[in-house]
Amino acid sequence: MSTNFRLRRQITVAVARKDLLIEWNSRILVNQVAPFAAIVMVMFAFALDNDGILQQVAPGLVWLATLFSMLVVIQRTFAVESADGALDALRVAGVDPGALFVGKALALMVQLFALETLLVATAVVLYGVEMSIAGLGMAFVTVIVATIGLSFVGTLYGGLAAGARGRETLLPLLLLPVVAPVLIGATRATEAAFGSGGASISEGWPWIGLLAVFAVLFGVVGAVAFGPLIDE
Amino acid sequence: METVIELNGVVAVLGQFPALAGIDLRVHRGEIVLLQGPNGAGKTSILRVCAGLMPIERGVGKILGIDLNTNRDAIRSRVGLLGHANGLYLDLTVTQNIEFWASTVAATKDEVRLAMQSMKIDGRLATVKASQLSAGQRRRTALASLIVRRAEIWLLDEPHAGLDAAGRNELDSLLRDAVRAGATVVLASHESERAGGLATRTVIVDGGSIGQGEL
Image 1 (cartoon, rainbow over the protein chains, first blue to last red):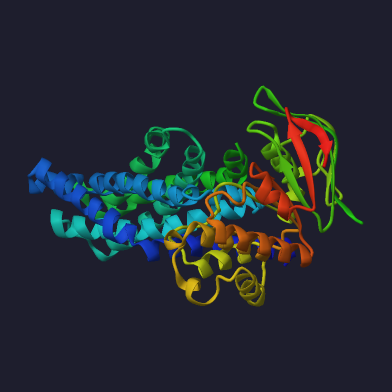
Image 2 (image 1 turned 90 degrees about the horizontal axis):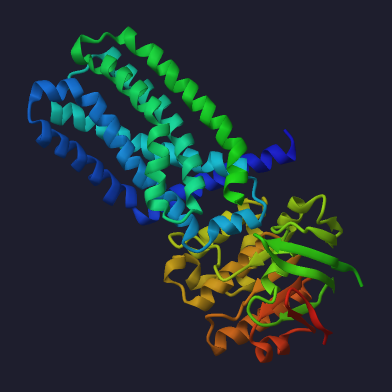
């Protein structure tokens, strides 16, 4: 294994560990973002107020709540970088931007996975969704693949917006249209997992394929483009 | 004595405006050079050029023997630029911050311990979050991160800003120690009296060029 590769891997792990340590020290995800996501799910229930409809639209609500919460998490993950000029310092220090991108995306994956698990559990309890063992497996795979894609694209656009004026409003404007394929694919796959509207498990796999293509695409694009983006 | 910074007729632009208009500057290893001049004179631009952050339009420049025209990115890992911000993660403790910077260059635990000792941020301060540190303590933590990154040239923009009298004295003493340990320091400052006492040489910068020559 070359020294460069080893150092890159070490930086990736260090960046991911650092972001998770920041979360551990500050508990923003646990104390603010997770309650926000749960409140969104409850508000959806109030707005629709019909068990039949709720069970049918539960997959879409789970992923909408995920996207809203993800925006908060991404804003936060880049706010800690700019609070005392740390992202600039990383750039100045010539830290490999590809390793930085993957490290930040890994930390985001862990946080999003925890959040989505909570949201799926909330849908089961709150909306009365019933799942078979096979459905549970499909929901798990959907969450994993969608999380990878969302983390890559979220990190890429978070880096893009980090240096811009009005980044708080710019990020949703840039990111939400780009993640529309994930919303569609993850919702359809979750419908298959939940059996919403009589959907069968086998109907979910092509959508998981779409999510996988999205994840690979933004993983590659992000690793290449993140450096020039944060350099601007 | 080895020349670590060599700028000959360097021209650099910031957006559409010329930031440096033909700078000539040589800095030798172990020097503490003060760049002095009014706001907008080009002091920060010189530091950014030396850090490999700002491309040069004309002229020739070498930092630690690396050509600024052809290999600017390679300079970044060998110099440390400390601007007005400290580059710290406010929700991490002092030790966690230094350990993170150490991991970006595969520095050892011993190097982390020595860097923290030399900046006097070991002991009680080690487990304090950066957000709870005073301005001086944050500065010392940032300087420890330069040490642990093995920066050979320290480029400091207004390093005394925000520090009280005791903190300034301490910083001067720390910079002298760093130079004795082999570093070279270039600092930009308005405070000529304070920084002039520290510097081994003062360079006047005005209008993007070396104004009245070197003092």
